[in-house]
Image (cartoon, rainbow, N blue to C red):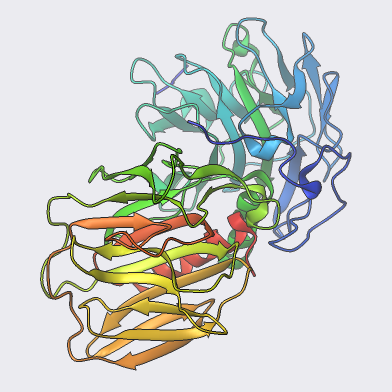
Length: 484
């Protein structure tokens, strides 16, 4: 057979994520995602861990295909993952799983199916099946961990078919997996990373077996996995781009998967409440590895990392209070004269108080070089101070809602976008006029004028992303953080 800190997981983060059964009945908005996703037209079967899922049996809510439990698998929350929602949990040591090897065909010869899985390995061990589908005797298509590389593997056409690896090694994070045949390639996509091998194949046998945490065929005895599964969807063919995008948005909104953004090619650094922010330090998630130590203006205080019950879809965020901030002022020069960085911030003000409040930005020990702030005056407005110290762009009136904010320069025009409302200013020079050696959140880069604000995501790119990259980032932010 081929195998190829403190992050504040407080529960419940807010009322809509409380353990109510069921949370709701159907598709919803990004700010209040529905329990069920919008199904592609080609959907054949779907197993949802909150819908007809018990230790005794897990039933497909499209076609009522029942997959019995073996040795009483667990249906419960997996702390720290899937937004605290109930998931189906298999266990390698106790041989707990769900499997049915006598189903009516749900994949047939000649088809090129598309499968969508939201789940994670709780332990990474060799030859561990996450979810598989096939036939009693000859088939074990699906997702495995191979040996000895510990990579996630996609397999097609059973024991006489082929497999190929994805991430090496796989980890214990929650992921969104897609695997499919398209007539040109066999494909495996893990979150944003795509892995392919050339193949014009279609299904060579009918799928009549389904398994979670073990193999679909009778050869599966002895091959088990310790895994958590939230959702498994099987389609007879690849969905349209719009259908796939809707599924992706639902997975990010409802399950919080993936919990990291799609990164533009020009990425320099990024921080989020789910990745890198702790009270003592905010750790850059890029190889640049910039650490922003926590500090305070007047007293021994540090930023908080926790859930904001008023916004951000129950996800953890960094929280400043006009005293505590993150800042590093002795960096090796990050950007040089005439560089044109692009800043992306997901944040909200928690106190609209007198005086200027600097939310985050770049600079050096003498001057800010691109700082997002709320201006002094009444009413205070969103403002981006210059990338060269001699101008600013003033945008909409600031409020206490969560926003997507971007700032960049193009030619002699400076741009500030607040939820796609664009404000511009003509400037003498679009590029940075001196090197960047300081980065801060909740204060100016010097630092000064700290802000009462919550930051969910702060991203610095070396240049403006492509339109497609920017659209993908916006889509994820809207879904994951529940922004309009």
